[in-house]
Amino acid sequence: MDRAAIADSATTSVVDPHERADYWAHLISTYHCRLGYRFPSHTDFQGHTQLRRTDAYQLVGWKSDAVTYLRTPAHIRADPDDDYRLIVPLVGHLSFRTDDGNGILTPGTMGLVAVDRPYAMSMSDGTRGLIITIARREIQHRLNRVTPPTHPLDLTSGLGRVTDGIVSALSTECAALTDLQFDAVAERLVDLICMQILGDPGSSPTQLAHVEATARRYIHSHAAEPDLTGTSVAGALGWSLRQIQLAFSAVGTTPSEVIREQRLQLARDRLRSPAYRHRSITDIASELGFGSTSSFSKAFRRRFDTTPGQLREGLASSIQPGRKPGATS
Image 1 (cartoon, one colour):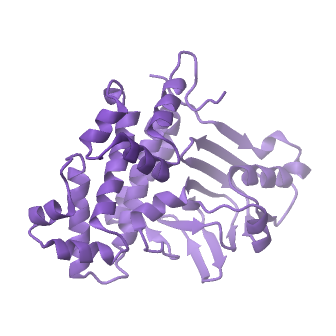
Image 2 (tube, helix red, strand yellow):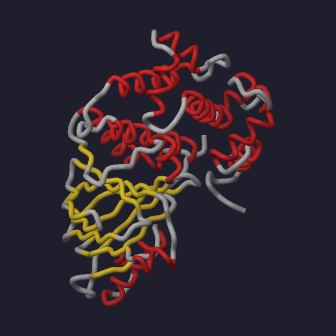
Image 3 (cartoon, rainbow, N blue to C red):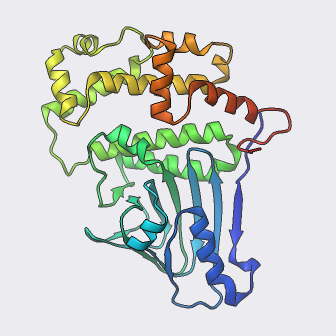
């Protein structure tokens, strides 16, 4: 199996000391979006990055001297970007200032930051960490109308500790993963992050929340069954359909929407999998309960910004002999 190497690594050591701050500013802006920078000293700034990027996700590991990053309204207007950044400090601490107040990220925590809003982020000498770019739609489809918290998420216990292990493994093993494998792990990471947000102890549990969480787990496990409906979920769990509907309505969705989302995720997994390469798109759609290939293709395109056929064609071209994963023509 072809293995995908880290797409890029960079260090300020390759340029003259008086050019290193400017080099770093340009480098970070190319990874993310337009930013402002404040350096305590513009002389001999030390910084190092490693980049792993696919069409769906990006992971940047960094270590650097002290610097403050600014995202102002002018930057947002000039370079719009509505994706989230998952920031995970490994050494040192990061101070945040936003319209909602101030905060600090330290090792053992992570923060989900929206870069379509102004902020300032400062770090001290020797700070090291990871930043993972996550498309907004991936967060929204999992959280529905729940807004990601502005406070840090805990990585030291429970689900947070499991999440921390996956973040660490994804960073350590990224050079040994193909693009498909990297994306699959990143998707599970997003699942866990959103699960942690929805189960945030800052909100008191209710019966509806319990019903919603249990129904989601059931749908996730049974999405491959073509006759799965809200009624069958309710019957299997011993609740009324009305209870299921109320539980999902409380988070801004419906049983049908959750079932469709899980089936689309499963369809994408199968279209990517070598084990299903011999199966037609029509067969995959039918087996997952979609009424027609046309309706499946439309729903798939709305969700993933590509058609099932285009996804398969892209995967086929990426594994042509002599072609590196992720390479473009």
